[in-house]
Length: 107
Image (cartoon, rainbow, N blue to C red; front, top):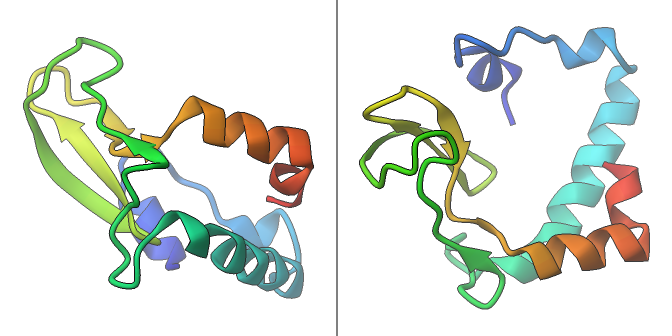
């Protein structure tokens, strides 16, 4: 993951290293990568059992341009309202299980 990739999105200007020591961030990132493997196939494509396609959450448009991919998650920019959103995204039931299990607290 590149901090430069994240900060290339106009509205996101954050330097994570200012929030936590680099070693702590690297530990969390290793945990994240390992725990997320089960949701993707061997090529890094989202497993459809765990993901769903969504339209723009602001204007409900289905027209978009690919903006950036970070750790196999695609971020799209809506052609109409220019919002940046994640799709496909993890299904609600998957996120609920992550929260209930405490897995998400580490992130």
